[in-house]
Image (cartoon, rainbow, N blue to C red; front, side, top):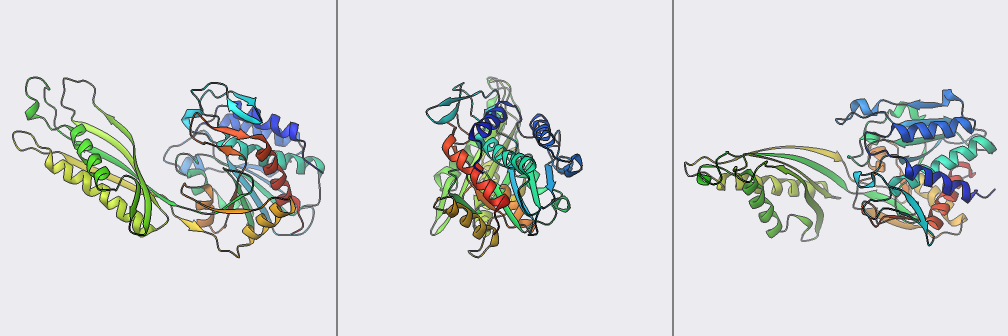
Length: 390
């Protein structure tokens, strides 16, 4: 049976309208639970884990898990998507325009990343519950805090998933895109301590934390360690994404807090990028001194958010995904992502996971939009993966 594209579009439109940034996903999850129970899910099949209690960011709720008993024998299959959106989506109102859903307000993003994936697997779960086709045991997983660093997937209670043998994540790009690997990411909190002084009376007696940050950032840019980083045949990226410093122009700023990241598919090269960032800030702190010889100090707290992964060509989930796409007349296009995915942590948990597109374009920008034709294809792919014989 073909999907009811009108109902699927109504679901995604509703989900795009519900606020739910990272750590504030409860309203979204409540909507999902309501739709699942109205479609016939036994409340005993629905669980929340405690991923939020393990996350450094806390949060309103953990990951939502639906386990549906099989109606025929076969290995358990997992379909998943993340429910949170980036802050730029706050206040988003979706409207249809020329075959796309777009934000009505040009100052907001849409939130198709990843409410389109959330909707695709929600609609699939609802159809399974209502239509009761023959299907193997199924687990549906909606994660929290993906946008903060994959914390929902990182701290998912694996025991509640039922040991799936095939796993499919819906997040990003056209429906035919099959992402088999993704980069690893390292984040850094940088604290610069300088020395306050009156900026008009005695600026030379101060040590500006802003100047230290500026010198370090300029050096990283000049030496090719910021932005797209290429050294020989090695590749990665880095970014200084957040700076908080200063309260008044008449004070030499004594403290600055920055957040940075480094990414690479090569863990050794990623570590080299991190060391370059650390060296630049420590060097700048030693070079910016007061007239009395006092210099700044830098403290850096870093952590691995997620490690890079790449599925093998013979991975069963990859084979199942590409087979499903071909049955639907789509040509699979394998992809390696330079962004992190929930699949990074699922694979690290011993559940190799392939990621499939669901129509998102221009994510994390005000130009974000959802291609409705690709979204409908993603709904067909999710159904095929849930109920197909192989």
